[in-house]
Image 1 (cartoon, rainbow, N blue to C red):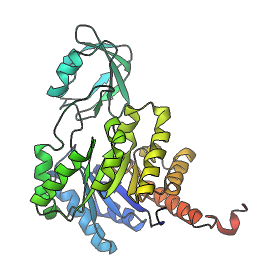
Image 2 (cartoon, helix red, strand yellow; image 1 turned 180 degrees about the vertical axis):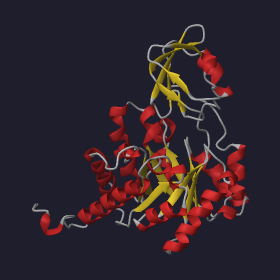
Image 3 (tube, rainbow, N blue to C red; image 1 turned 135 degrees about the horizontal axis):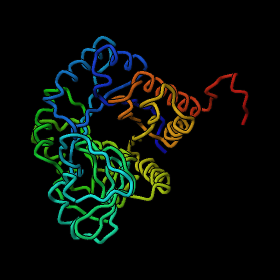
Image 4 (spheres, rainbow, N blue to C red; image 1 turned 60 degrees about the vertical axis):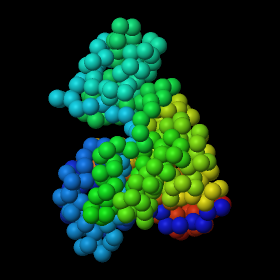
Length: 342
């Protein structure tokens, strides 16, 4: 059994927290570090944002831990001139969406009814004859949103050219850890380790994001090749039936505990706080239970990068995590006010 440790709290950098004042408040609430999603930007383009974060951390007397989430073999649509609204039961041509080149032959040859999940599954399309697509679950589609093709394997390199460039620049921008998305097996992690060594960054921590069926199947070989496993429930919830996702999360957590490997839980932990000032009861229960399962860290994504209440979201995350740590230690989070006995 892993020894209980202080759970690390991470947010995600973005427009909603781009100023030092907001970042300072988030750090003061107890945030330990930030993630930068390089699927939507580049280190060079984020220099001002990173500098604002560094200055806020200096003022708060805290280290500016910075995790870069690379592109990796993740599939994303290309650039759209403007967002596209897809309406339920609408039929569109396959060329209406800028799919990556490597997926087009696979989609054209797929059996009718093949699912195409976009934007973490918010939008669902199905293939039809003559390269047509039917919108099953609609929404507004924006550039660079994720693609999941359940049951179809797409063979792409572990790292893009942009990823390799970002690794070479990592030290100059104060990066402390690298998150490798859509890990399929140990070879993906070994390739990243080799790139880190070549760039003089062998000391950076490597986090393996488990978010597809291959990653789950090869979990045992991933554990010794990374510093931390990330249970990335967004795309993982596309790779398995959604109602089975909690069981998969529990199995991954148990395997990490047995191996003594740190693990992080991410995605939609406080999703309602993107537009609301308080979370749902289900969300705080989810965070609490992740800590009881042994998570070494938890992270918010869109809630802080693009949400309306980034400081409040971090506050609720920190308070819920600390309450879970108190409970885990054998005490009642509410002290004498708890009124419960076991």
